[in-house]
Image (tube, rainbow, N blue to C red; front, side, top):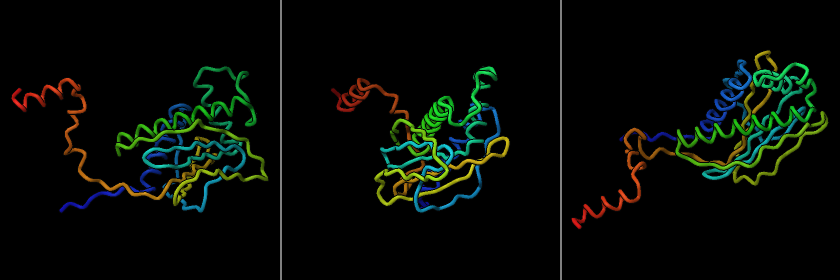
Length: 209
């Protein structure tokens, strides 16, 4: 009997890490890398200098946070704006600028959108997200988000920008395992493209009506 594959929190986290890397690398045209190790943490928090977060629910519930230093946030923002064709005198140099916050919110939206697509493609699981939020966090503050997650499991992964500035991704999701029932390659998905009328006609044909 074949051993059933089980996907855990860390497998979901890896999918998310690849979405972060993919979106930020493509939109800034820089080399974004993430650490090959993951840190288990007790809870997720918004930390200085800028914190972005989004809640998701559906097949499972969770919270995604990206914490950036001022330098990392400005670097990502400026590279993004240059790729969009903005001139240097139109690009902010301060991480507290509204433009920086708006851009980070848009990137977070793209990241979660890519993550949603990959979850549906790889695991056939659907999740919905809230509108991403961004906060400039004071040096003396660490903010927790009450996400009401059942038996949360939290993880942190460190990322590095093209100029070696670091930022962190934190994810918290309910404790759950996804156990493979069947090899996806053995399933026939062609029926998904059959219209309702065609299904009804096939049913009638089987009854010889």
